[in-house]
Amino acid sequence: MMTQPLLDTLRRLKLTGMHDALAHQLTQPDTYDLPFEDRLGMLLDREVLHRDNRRLDRLLKAAKLRVTACVEDIDYRHPRGLERGRMAPLTSGEWIGQSLNLCITGPTGCGKTWLACALGNQACRQG
Image (cartoon, rainbow, N blue to C red; front, side):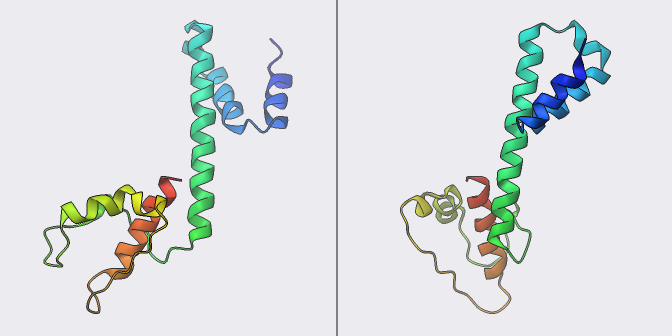
């Protein structure tokens, strides 16, 4: 089997995810038993994941968020006045799609920057 020209072609076409997945499949003898459609599906899934991760990295880098935070880590038990029901529309990102602004206010040290970074991170993950 001529795999090196195939790997070179994938790299030239900038299908890096598929290239890496195929190289990994070639080292795993148990994948040879899988049907062609399954192996092709695995290669395509890996390419989509690779592109999504690159897009997310690019968006996060461009956002220049000060803190690494995500909305899943919001602690609603802490007495800050955050309510899960009010945060749901913010975490869904629908306000961004409507071109609305968000103003976060509160006393010093209550987590305004962290919350803004968590919402920014969520917006990047949603594209």
